[in-house]
Length: 322
Image (tube, rainbow, N blue to C red; front, side, top):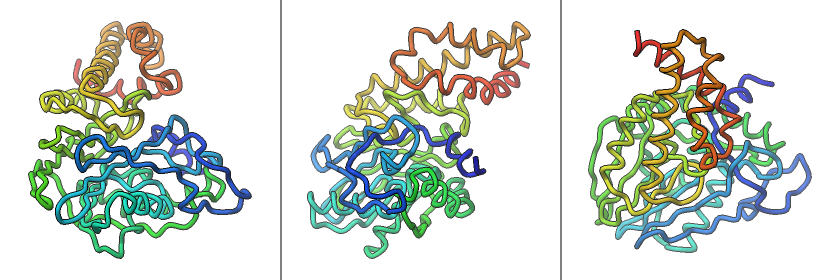
């Protein structure tokens, strides 16, 4: 396993199920191979949902994260662009089926390659591309590695990609008027990963969450800060969103936020119980599994992630206890 394959196994949380018939193993997918169907979730707001639940493969063409876009009076705001330039082209073509407005703004939720490698597909419209500064630094350092990793894991399906980095850093909560649409950009404080951003649309009460929200898939916690994530969810719950577009999983409402917070609180509390009993991290796993038993059905993939989730959260809990 290469270093980048190992990285993706750690940080990519879910990927698509098969979307189309696939050519030979050395052939890159074409934009039309990605069955992207924009789903109107509110006036002018569209989600582009993947049925992703597992790691990238040749069969699923590497489509592994949800995307969204907002049609304003003066252009389109895109939230995340996918795992490759070809995937970004597929998204661009899906947007064109809805509106002839240009893409003027892009928000990349974070630095994991499944959320931003499609940026270059929109280069011709010279968009403002926003990301957290910590995420931007990672993108610059790791972009080529992400491209190669997706190509390796999909046996070439994601093809060639020219990484296009964000050009605007956002590290504080800001509210902007984009083409007559009020857009609030919310940094997470590094909840899921350094530099996470979400977008809140107060006029339609839609939350474009990125990976700070998982719905029907166990969350990946090892690149972030679980305590901060729990606090962030208080902020997101207070928004009372009508629609939540998660980074991975199905469309949800505000109940997804309460459920995810309960998952993270239970994880933290169970590890804390183990620390106080003097258990090592690996000895705490059965206790955590027992305490979280009533949540497992809501989060497929739990068993695949629980050992690593405990191991990476344990040091923070231990530091908090002592």
